[in-house]
Length: 610
Image (cartoon, rainbow, N blue to C red; front, side, top):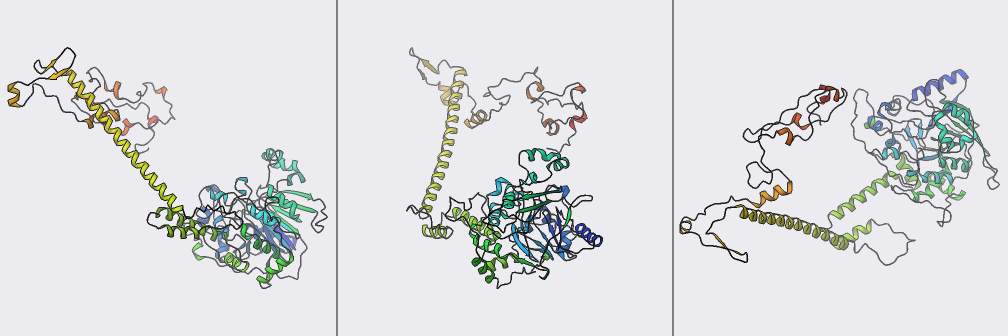
């Protein structure tokens, strides 16, 4: 059977299918299957386009929306994996694979299917070390971080693929296996892509998990894309006596993206079982591995360790024939992948009615639900939704714990706590005292805030009292002394003498000092503001007539008188004097002179810019 292998699709389905039809006519062959190695871009509408991680200038609807809506049907059965330029919100609905459009099948995060007896596997995404050991925690709507991390491969997919023991015919990955460059024409590669040299010399080019899979699975063919260059290599494996049926040689091929005069297509001829129908089938061993490792599925953003020899009691989750037969019985002996694709009319794209700001929401796909029900496995999207719901419940519990009784909190928390049967019970369960600990923390925080407020009031009052006392002493020292008002003894003590009869009758003193409130003094002290000109309490000297306003009030020096001091292309910062209204007092404060704009380019910003 002739199989067409394509590198990076980038949504150019029409051009790819037209090229294949041209090859069929020219070479007089029949192509039975198309494999795409990532960057498929299954974009249905503008919302999917916003979920794709790439510069805006490269975002385009391309051709897939026509196949999704039913305007066109793929002329060839097409199987693809995801890359790093995908509508991740749509592909995330099918973590275990499924139909994205009629006759177009996605392998999921990782997957294995069979077509006419040819076993085909794939691994979606690219490798990034900082996300490799995390769970699939991303869910639409994405932020700038999760929009990228959602297409990074995880260790759970690699772990599951390593459990496969039967021969693999074809494997696909988006990025190259790490050591494959050493098994091909490296110099020719560096001549085409000179900027690869540093990564090649430091052994950083490619994915290390993909290389581990290549050496473990030993497929006959391994196809990749991502680097947009054609490269071929042959990897010879060591003969392993324990697995004599494994392939001893893997043929690697990487292809370019779909552009004119680029090597983006390769047609190969592989033996197959012609008597089998033109249908895709589940791989029974892969389904058994999915079921055996279902408890290892994680949706946590934190790193976790998978079962490892020497650290865990069980680290081998490969399945035997008995478990494979159990899975086949669960499916009633029918491994054919049902063509149960149903488009969502709300996701259709209308070129005449653009919806660029449509809300991006996560959806549960019916294909994934049916598969999970048949196998008894869990949909990661549902796990994320339940985890978020529990998080919201716990948050509301913390906020509303003041009116709940201890028994209510105890029962609510216990329903959300998972029990590990292997954990050693030390008798210090914290669920019963949870309410009391949080209540104590609440009252301590409230008491601390109250004490802080009291301290601030005390400090402000102390400062005000001190300033009042200082002001009263200064006024007493500066005011003229009445000869009959006070008497001073030899020890320096003063005493208040009696007032004259006229003063007693009229109730007036010879000189009344103006009353100054402590609030004005404290405010002036704390804010460090200049006092009014005619205020006797001001500590700043009065402004004389010889002092100009520019010498005292200008926060920066005026514009130079020379035009050469300012570049013609320079944009000066906006000055407050350019926009603020002038407030003048003709009696005390003359208006400061306005700056003359000596270079218009310096003030190129509009008055409304900030």
